[in-house]
Every structure is written in C-alpha cells, then in structure tokens.
Length: 195
Image (cartoon, rainbow, N blue to C red):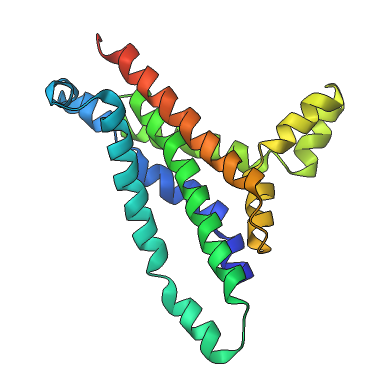
C-alpha cells in the first residue's frame, strides 16, 4: 500500500482545504459567528469541536478505504503493522492540514480565498523538504535556517511513519503543528470578533 499512502499528502492539499474552507468563513459571512459566541461554550471548545468534526469526517473517509487493505491481505501477506502505521500517519497529516485550513478560514469571509491560501500553505509544507527548495535557500541562508526549513516538511515526517517507524518526534511534530494552528485560529477569531 506504499503508493496508496504516498499519494495522500498531494491529495490532502486539495481535499482538506475543501473540507476546512467553510469552518469559520461561512460563520462570518452569514453573521452566525456572534450567535455561536453567545452559546454556553468557550471559544476554545468551539474551535476544537469544529476541528474534531472535520477530522472525524476525514477519518471516516480514510476508514472507507479498508477494502484496499482487505484486498492486499487476500492477495498476499503484507506487514499489517506497517499498513496501520500508514493509516495513523495519514490521519495525523490530515489533522495538520485541517488545522491550517481552520485558521485560514477564520481569517477570511470568502471560502474560495480560504481554499486557495490553505492549498498554498499545505503545498509549501509539502515542498519544504525537497532538494530543489533547500538548494535555493542554501545559496544565501545559513545552514541552520536550511535545516529548520527542512524540518517543517510534511513529507519527511510522513515517510518515516510510512516505513512503520512511529517515532515520537513525528507524533510531536504533527501534534504541535495542530495545536499551533488551532491556537492561531482562536487568536484570529478573537481579532475578528469586533469587525
């Protein structure tokens, strides 16, 4: 299933911004954000609730690919723990893209703008580990900056999970990225409350 999973980062660049573009922009456009803020829930609970709903939707879509896993098991003898790690990595990658999309959706009233900007940011995270990008930065930037740019690559963290190696550093990378972008979502909504 390696080719199946290697396609996910590129698929999520289109699919996840399409899911997340309405999370907050539609609330602002329709004027229901004020109504949502008057409910007896905190802003943190609203942000996490919307994020988890979108993440569950994505997880259901991912789970519905299980016939591929069944077919592979029927036709051969794959290492099922590596396949399970691939599903876990794919779910974490989807969560990271969703949190980015949620933040961008909170910054704009226009869903199309939220989609395009989320796509560009996810694309940048995917490309940040490519040699051509790193060579461009290494021509003028110190090696420490090039290493930082390389460490933000979705692909490098995702590929290590695809090999079946669930490294705590990869889990922390995706979890901290999700937490950072959800916190940025809260700040964006707080800043836009008055407008």
